[in-house]
Length: 302
Image (cartoon, rainbow, N blue to C red; front, side, top):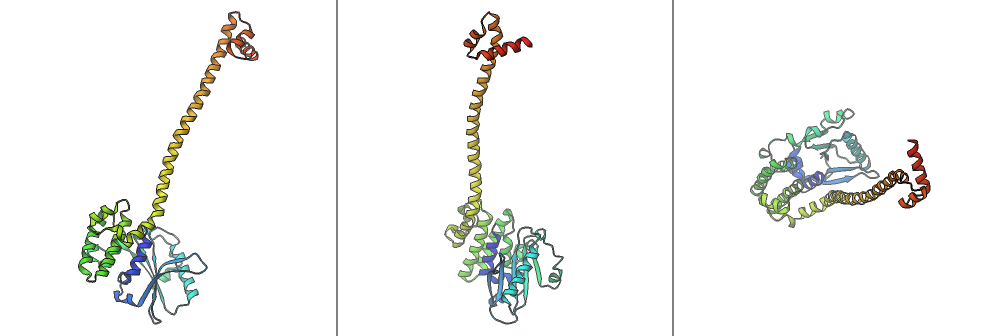
């Protein structure tokens, strides 16, 4: 599942969720602008950065979403942050927040960066340790939907949809969060049709939403590669079968030729014993005189 895309969209459209996640007032989001930052002259890209809108004592938040084990995550992250600080020379202090699905995915080596963690400058959030979705704020519960297994996700998604309709009085915000939940479902239930998803969760036509179209566009290369591999396997099997048949026919002809040749050679002693000359036997069997003579000599010596 494209977790980077989901979290980027979530924090961009609901930045208050991030501040709830780190224990800050959700209203703090009003003072920030969220974006992805590319470090100049390198291939580094930070997943997301919350930049203060004004020059004051607010903090820059670097956000990294890590859903795959990576032993070098911390060396890479701190390299990115230090390069960003060097290139941009911001006046603000900074913090880093890493979001993991589970603690087991956090495999990075921290021995060179222990001071960052001890000082509280860097914090790690494990989504599976946040608690039950029912007891969490709606935004954080929506984040946790990303890691729910398919059986649990069905019930949790229904609860989130109901809560969204009850807790959001603003139709645009309600529609926005519902579309985000729909996007997560599209990624999570990739093998289900849009009609099945819509019917299961009693939501509108996913195909008509911008999120569905974007998700479909993002998933298309991945699905195309999978289909390509499947088709290549099918074609390979068909070609192998066809080649097998051709080779089988060639081998059959070669074997038949060898058997006929062996039968002719085995007949030479018998024909010679009947009083036929070497030349007559060669003509009768379609062999050379030399072949008949050598076969007869080998027969005599054995």
